[in-house]
Length: 87
Ligand SMILES: [Zn+2]
Image (tube, rainbow, N blue to C red; front, side, top):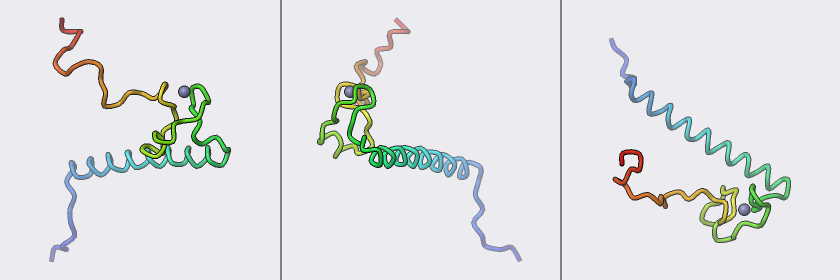
């Protein structure tokens, strides 16, 4: 008799690996955060050392940059479709 265990396809495994990778990255950033809290450096910008806005910290507790040095994610200056390289 065949056992009824679930067999995972290769793409399932790839998706799981991707999830694991993302969780590992998340874990690494959380560990870095804990280290900073231990070192009393939590909430200070990695780039300039000034205090990070409390609103920024509460919306993104893992942030390590102040408003001036944070990478602008989700706010791409270039509009989609206007690729300067293809001009
Ligand atoms: Zn800064």
